[in-house]
Length: 211
Length: 211
Image (cartoon, rainbow over all chains, first blue to last red; front, top):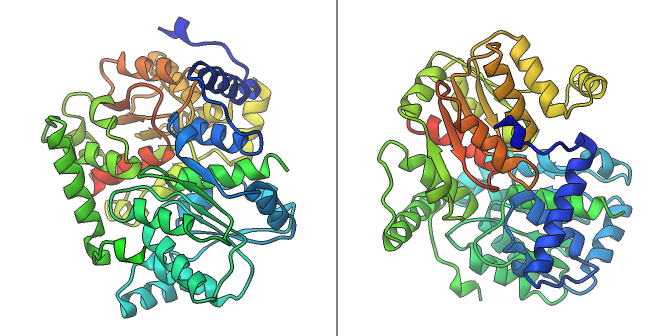
């Protein structure tokens, strides 16, 4: 059985994976847009799920805008510790940027309890209260996306980018469509039910790795 | 658009999600084994991917064996910081157990470089050198699974459980089959290319939440 293991140098594993993904996309007849293909391929690399070739939606010029924001040191705010763990913080720090996640903060738990919301909603409110430019990477909670939509509509925030890729069954599809309905907010959205903290992190990394 | 958001209490979101999953599995005619269905459903909950109803393979009695090991305080060793971040460490601590991840350790990086292996391999060697009972939760690196297989065949370790759910394109399928070929090692395996750190973490949590 060990003989069936392909001998690939550690440093070559990722390269070989991307070659396989590229070959299979070609066999499927999928043609990706050059601006966004590295992000799509990295999502497939992270999930082994080729549905991302169809489900990912990018607003116009979003990749350049996102890279500009990172270069200006704009922080990434995530809705899970897993998302935070997965983002390459060393690379991000090279641009003076960082990842923030307020989900485990005590004041967030208290605010959520007091207001009868999810902690994700309270953590978005906490982020808004910072009054800073921000990139939001939401991989878990559709309630976070709904709150971001409300905050934008109320003129309280104006995100540099929303990565809208929560996963699940309750309000996930709808919350992503809400974000896509925002005409002036750059976004990267995985339409449908699929996504996750790992996808949110990998999209951030895909942006970083092409800078 | 906001009117399309279903009103669900924060405390009810997970319950509602599992109801939808249960309904849709029924519509698909999938019948799950009572011992393992909570794990399968939580993997679907984490990924929105119903393929896990078919791809997850459990060795006999593995759920009870895994719960026994956790109750004895056996630690979970993961191959990613993301997996570690996703496991409910508070619940685990109630049993005197913990999550260990050696991937960012300096000695692991050095050993990997010296031996020309992945860091995942070096981190499995470090785990083996502890000489402790262990549950392995591998969500990223097939090379970690290959090394665990070798260590078991060499009689150097005898894991309480291997959660074998790496994701990807290079040796992922083969490495999982290697683990399944081990007759005396309890395992939970996601056959095929799919899996991930999030799936590894969610299987650990699914075990904890039924204890």
